[in-house]
Length: 167
Image (cartoon, rainbow, N blue to C red; front, top):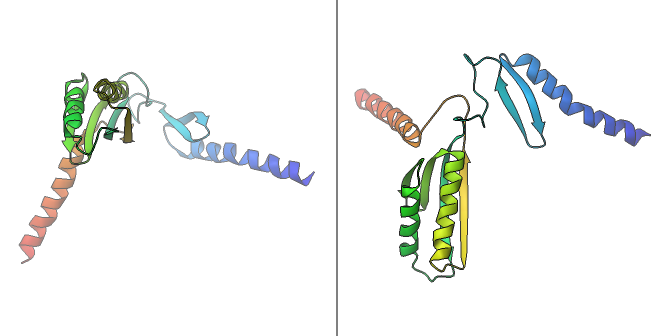
C-alpha cells in the first residue's frame, strides 16, 4: 500500500510543476507535454514567441561533420563533393570550417541537404558514412550564423577599445 501511495505522489509532481509554470509565466500557456520536452506557445501573435514548428518558424543552425569511412586516409575529394552538394542545396546557407560545415535554413531543408550529402558519398562508393550534428533552434527571435559571429566580434571590439583607452 505504501508503494502505491508513493507512486501516486510521484505521478502528481509533473502536473503540479507544469501548473505552477503556466500560472507564473506571463503570456505563455503550455499545451503539450512529452517525456523530454515542453512546447511553449504564445497567447498573442503580437507578443511572445511563435510556436516552433509552425510554417516559417523552423529555422535551425546546424554544425555538421560528415565523414566518409572505408575509403582510405585521404578524404579531401569526398569532402569537396559533400561541400558542393551542401552549397548547391536550395534553402540553406553554409560555411565550411576545419572540422565540418555550419548550415542554416529551415529544418526540412537542412535535413534534406545532409541526406543528399550521404547519398553522394554512397554514390561515390563509400561503404560507410558517419555524421555528427549539433543543432540550435530558438523561438524568441530569428538569428543567423553571421548574427551570432557579429555579436561576439562586437563584444571583443568594445572590450578591446575599452582596454586601449585605459593605457
